Length: 564
Image 1: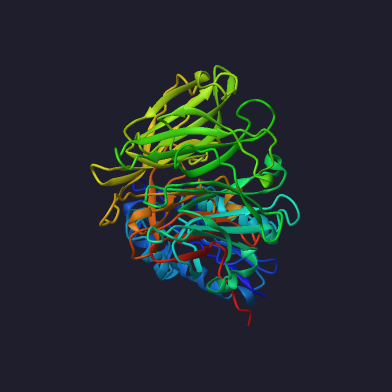
Image 2: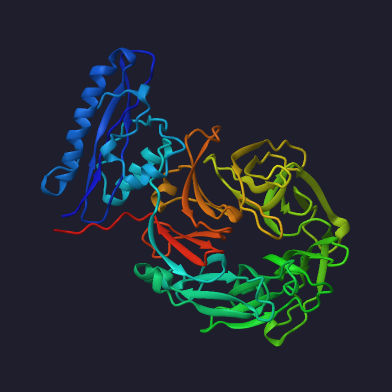
């Protein structure tokens, strides 16, 4: 019978005071399945400098015994092993050296001495799934760093840029087979051909053969394809995706908004609903929202166009008006511009409160204007630009790559956060703003989650770092524990991918530790995404390596053990 080793080696306590006080629980779950035993080592921590010699020796001895008991667990008729481990936070140790994996040590060079855990004593005599949840509650909510995910493999895919995973709402909805991976690409040297968009059905059933994934071509009729955005069925009558495209590079400036019907196999399309464009707009994001109050979902987008002669960049926040014209029939979707010289690349639509009233608010990261701005209307009608109000939230961010809206500190209230790059200082940062009760008149205090991101240089054009990001939990159990989420972050033009972890469970502590997950060794990394591809309760990470031409796939699922 395989065993789950949850070995506790606690070195907590305080520097002042020699008396034993408080209890701690710590450890790492290496495997858990229906046939597993869970070994829980419960330790009492305390002591001060005066007792370090004996306490440390005693603690190390007991921890060593508990470790070997965990190894012998399959042959022992015990479910819980209780041990007492006196501790010494003076040394800042978290676990005995022999419990640290080499891979983990390599990724923790920036902080060799993370804070010890101080969680309440817990007797976890529950079923396996409940025990895992409780264990992660102790470890994650208390601020213990999570081991890096393990690699499932790499796939060679030329110019892999943006990656997304969507789950079908019908048919195989919610199932492994209902998930589809999408990857866009762009090649500035491909001036005569089109850039490709790929897709892979049911990637979760193919995690043991990542290098052999047979990516299918979704789109080969666009230039410089960017993000692939989800389209709900109620928008146009079928579920699908929107492929955005266009950029500044010569021969790649004519962007499109192309719809695909993913209910069919192969997907139907493309159906271009940006045929009435008056400029060669570049599109990066498309969302669906009823902008004019007629009950239909309109396609909302931000776009930009740069005049090749004057160099002047035009920006536009607009929507494609859904009048019931089927995109399959190449119906022309009329365009309504909402804001000029504002949103251009990244934006989100959220609900915020002011004066006891909820408003639909656009959070815009304005790349060219180098600022974060809020836009809203009094009654939710965006059809008249005169109705639109705005508030500049921050104009010191530098170039904003993207904006996000998630609860980062676990207090139940989402934060606004963004990645930005100071072009003059050549330094990138990740910022977060706390959302006030009144978004119109309240203060939005800003904190820096991480900084000192430095992009590689290019012969032509500017570079920036960091890029896209996703807030996530490594597993369903971790999310249920109430722990702070991790942040998966693309370094974009520094060529790396990172995982940021909060070092404290305190909602007021915004300290993060950066782990380098992938060093591509090339100029530019791509977008990142997170999904539980195989529905096992553990999340997978899919990372694009643009310049190197690869997809990297990782999982937080434990390494399978071989039964003897």
